[in-house]
Structure formats: C-alpha cells, structure tokens
Image 1 (cartoon, rainbow, N blue to C red):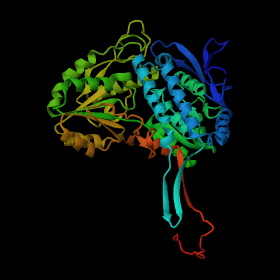
Image 2 (cartoon, rainbow, N blue to C red):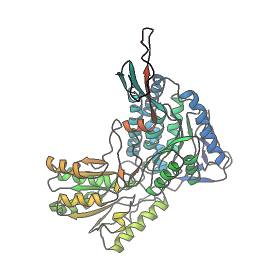
Image 3 (cartoon, helix red, strand yellow):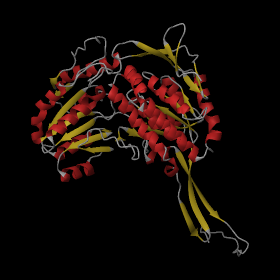
Image 4 (cartoon, rainbow, N blue to C red):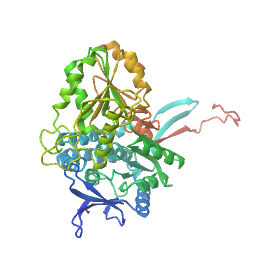
Length: 509
C-alpha cells in the first residue's frame, strides 16, 4: 500500500494523496496548494484539489462498500476501534510532530489535540451498547414492538484547520462503527496529520472503501453536499461556510450538522479563586494562539473583579511566543500569513473604535523564526458590544474585556450575543453557579472551567448561532445522527390461535 504522503520525484516536494477504495492515489488535478509551516514558511508538501471525477469515485467506492460493511457484526466493528485506539496511542508523538509542523500549535497541545480525538475512538469501541434498540413485549395481545438503529449509508465529513486530529476523529470513527461508510475532506491547510491517522485506520482493519479521503475547496465541499449517494454531512468550521453547507446539504435531502463560529465569554465574579481564574483566562484565551472554536475570547469582569485586570495583563506577558516544536513554548504562530493579516486588521479596528490596547502583541519578535506568523498575547479593555472586536470571531490570541456591575447584567450581555458555543463562570458561590447555568442560553457551560468541551460519552452541544442541526458531533447524539430508527411491530400466531375475524379499526386486538 502506498503512503498517504509520498515524495514526488520531479518537483522534490511531497504530495498528499487521495484515498479511494482502499488505495492512496495521486490526484490528476491541475490545482494544487502548498502546505506551509507557519513558523518558518517552509513548504512541507503539496495538497491536490480533487477533480469532480475523483470525488465521485470516492463516494461511489463508499457506496459500494456499504453493501457489505452494513452487515458486519457489531463485535467486528468494535474490535477495529479497539485496535485503532491502540495504534493512535502508539503513534501519538510522531503524529504530533507532523501536526505542529503544519498547523503551528505547541507539541504538548498537538498531543492534546490527538488525545481528545482518541477519547472519541475509545467511546466508539462501546458501540455494542450505544447502538442498541428498544423492546417492549405484549404491547397488545400477542404483539411485541422493537426498534433497530440502522446505518444510513455514505456519510461525509468536512473538517477545519485548527484541530486536524481531533475533529476528523470526532467524525469518521463514530460514523464507521455505526455501520456507515465515509468520505472525509480534511482542511487543505494542514491535512498531513489527518492522513497519518487515516493510515492507522486502515492498519487497524477498516476495509477498503469504508473510509475515503478527498482534498479541496468549495467545489469539493459542494460536491459532497449535493451528491445523490451521500446521506449525511458533518461540518466543523466557520459560520459562513457552515451555513452554506447546511443549506446546500438540506436542499439535497441530507442530514446535516454544522458546528460553526463562536464568541465565548468568561464571566468572573469577585469571589472567584483569583490565581486559578487568571491562569484559566490566560490559558484559554491565548492557548493555540486563540485558534480554537471554544477559546475564551471575551472576559466579562463583574463588580470588584475589574480590579484584577492589571494582573491578567501581567499573566499574559509571561507567556512565551515561539515555534510550536521549541521547548517551553506557550503560544505558536497562527496558521497562515492571511490569518495573521486578518487578526492584525481586527486589532487595528479595535484601536480605531476607541478600545484601550492594554497589551499589544503585534510587534512580537521570535529569534530564529523571523518569517513566522506570530502574534503575541493581546488584550483590549474599555470594549463595547458594538465594536467589531466584540462582534467578530477573531481567531487569534486576542482577549477583549468588558465590565458590568452585576451577574444579572453579565447573563443578559452573554445572552444577547448571537453565538452559543461555550461560556464559563468563575465563582465560589454555588447559588450563583446554579442561577448562571439555569439562565444562560449557551450550549456548553463551564463552572470554573473556561473551555467546557465535554468528554465524548456526553454530547457536544453548541447552540444558537454556533450550530445548525439538532444533533451534536459526538456522544449519544451522534449515534442518533449516524443511524436511522426502524420500528418493528410483530405478532406471531401459533396453531391454537382462534381466528377473531376481520378488524377494520385502527386498534390492535
């Protein structure tokens, strides 16, 4: 079997392959994109934008494989996931190095990226109970009713650049273990770590055609959302693209889940544990250079906690900006030069809007990596809710700070924001925490936890402007998403049954 990334003999630059029907194949496309190390600008490889015919071939391979895969015993599917999680665990350091090189995040954070996906694979190994139906005996005279949770067919996944390990692992393992086949489109910015995980899936025993991979941009996305053989589409990424995916997929009769943009708030009450809270805000705001859909991007200081602001600035100043593979790095580069320019533009808009730049990370210099896409920790104060830096998902190491007098006003402020991914409350008051979790209109709530992403046996539950579709991407909800319920009502007659004549009513007797 060929590798997912191989060295091209003429160009001298590695090329990322497509996976179609169990084989890693070179694309015949004329459109390629460089995969660039964001700390050095070195070209690591080239990724193809697959042709229409290649996308169609991947989908048709998945459709053909479904005919047999859907009948594979649950135990066999489960054992593949058990082997897969062991392989991921074994190869985690190697894949983390690839991930850091192409995405920029620190090596420890890259391992965390892989580990949070590994947790989903471990959960997938519980499919024997997750996919169980229900049974009721004797619902009417001699009548039993039971449900079956059956796979849908070909499912597709479209994943973002910021978690090239975790989010693909949210998708294809759960879809496959439920008996579906899958076509994955990783981010074209950093697909190499995803492909390394795909190689391990094949090694774990995923049969040919059950998992396929295509690369590309909007044309490939549109093909997955509109192809007649695709039954469901899972998406994680920006609000603009996620809305498009949801509409196009829905128009073509597919199930769609779109997890989209966010503006996550952290509300700080004066009774919170000061040092732990400041550490949490700095870690969640600036970790991964702010490129997390669950990053804390807004701090709401309530009452006397406004006095903590200088300490938050000092805490942020201690964070080390460097290439992700360097020891002791806290913040790596943002993913691309375009991303850096976008973040710098938003910082400039905040200055022009009248916010106070309490900490300016724009001029950060990283010796030895002068060409890297680095931005240091940046903090705005005196921010109002009509400013672009508050309303827009910055996706960089930028915290905006607002102040309100009371918890009620903090709750109202958060609930007015259109996004609904995550929120955190920092307090030592159980009464305040209970009020907050009851009244806040956000999908995922953290109490003294800034990034409340649940473990995979609970469901990821972003809401409002952060999510389209009613079922989350992992946990119990995703088993519902990747299966359809068939209800069977059965009556069996023995030889002694008395014929009670024709029944023309709608009742059973």
